[in-house]
Length: 260
Ligand SMILES: [Zn+2]
Image 1 (cartoon, rainbow, N blue to C red):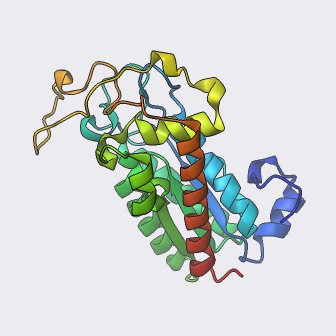
Image 2: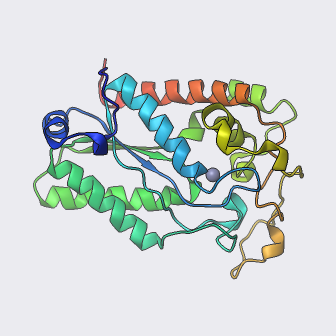
């Protein structure tokens, strides 16, 4: 769209103002977490991936990317290994809700009317919904009623056909993908210098009873911190998912925001 990178925080204010004030520019807000992702990947996987998806999508639809939320809601044992794991630094749910609510309202105050929340950490999901609901309600109180927010998690755009290619031996489900083939492949495609695949620990997908226990029973989490094995990850799989998810998100946002 233009040769400037789409990151809002990299722009001088007149450029930002020109893009946001008319309400037409979609504003993408990536949300991540600082969370352990096994022995083979850094703590910022959930930050790096939605940020890069947001950048790619914004370049295609003429959007702007907000600074990424580097912290997210507390890691849960059955989808993120658990908040007890070393390296996992989380926010209280209420803190996350209020921060995201405030950021949406602030962009709206400067003219933003079309938002996409691009989630990279499953545990954030319900808190995003709450923040969006509060922001829309409070903006209505201020007389701003024409704000639209699309909420998405990038992995939901991996379609059945792609799942069959990525997991030829059977799909373990997104919940136990934590640090597994999906995230590791995407990281190999985007940031291979941050992946130490030789340190990845091979183990069967984690199994859990159909309930949670607090305080967590730490022995339920595989010692590696990953919930399924990343051994079948590859750069090629990452590139395939990168393309499929980027295309899917671009199409969804073009539809929702009526962009040609
Ligand atoms: Zn993750």
